[in-house]
Length: 616
Image (cartoon, rainbow, N blue to C red; front, side, top):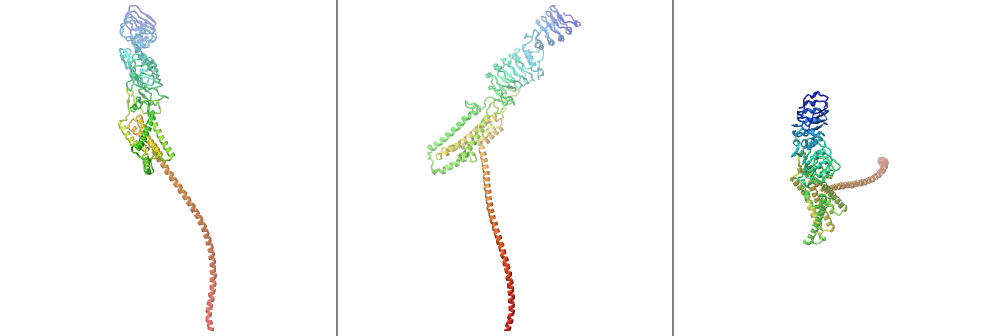
């Protein structure tokens, strides 16, 4: 045995007791030698290593206990002997594994590369623990234990002591994902979702050839996705959404992605980057708002004709079909009128019949619509009607183009209806649009558009009547074509747009009303024109009334001038009359005076008559 009492040898630096057939334990007090640097007890029959040797951490450089009869486990305190060379080989009775810190932190531990004592995967997991700030994890059961088998660490799954799964989602991981994760080469499931791991996704992850499930979603990974992921030929599930990734998704073997939630990334719009992540093979694309959408075509897109990428590409064909339908109806009407009914050509006696047709055509196309201008003879009015129809088609075209499910087009109005919860492998469609909404939509569109479609067909039938002028036939054809085309295209745009946008019953009603408003623009413009015309007519009438009043004022002014002249004349005549009256008055006064004298004379004569008689 090695005797005790070593504590008094305070200056002892090297102690070599090798090959002395020593038995028992290494004395505890050796662990209290402050200057000891080397302890060699190899090639003996010692059975125990005291944990107190961990006290030699400051100066201790070498500990050799190889080829002994040590039993039990290696003291974990040896892990505190930093920068110390430790040799324990040749002790067959010791119990593995070696302490975790001894295997991980020491480069000169002679059993470090022996899997029995230091399983390589345990060291990799320890490195992973430190790189992801394991001390801050929500739960890290057994990850810091020195002896517990790594297959019993929380989140670690093994098959025959080989790591096949690492499930640490929503566990408070941070830091960075180390490149040595690739050394867990048998791992099949790697789920680190819903944490705060930063940095780039290491390209070495592409070396995990057995990986079937890779979930790195809802972290803070940035930069591009390594092209080495294309080497993962057995992937059945890949979740990368909820990060800050951009660029091109590598070409993956998607034959194993059997479910709709198998392949998810942030390839949707809006994105926090100038260009969204391009992933043409993803089964679900998510955007920066956390909304997601399945890339699988919806039920409407599945019925698209082959050879067309989207509904916008189908518009020219749709237009050609409607024009062809219009020509067929017009020609069929003409042939029916000519050969089936054997109607005679137009004659002067049919003016009243033709006039009735014109009135009915006007009622059909709408007397309160600018389309009625098409039936008139004014070229400017007809051009205005064509301009309005073109505007409506243009506006409806934008509804169709905005409804295209393009995950790289920021102008798309497509509404993402899927949600991919952090705590679930599966995504689900959260749309609340039920069949009742489509029933209401059908009733609204039928109530508003069916009449126009029927009236448009009637106008197309009118254009085939032999009794009409050729110019009338042309106007009827264009009127029917416009009415049918606008109504049918509005129905097409509304269906496509609602499939892309509506996610509730109120959504589909609101969208239908908006498109109906676009269809009614011709009527609103007509009302505006009529209102302006009414105002213009009122203004013209007022102007005519003002002119008439001004003329009347001028006439009255002239009459007043004439009256003033007449008044002046009468005034002058009055003055003359006054003068004459004055003169006559004077004459009267003179005559009165003369008459008075004559009366006085007469009275005198009458008084003289009796006297004369007396004298006689």
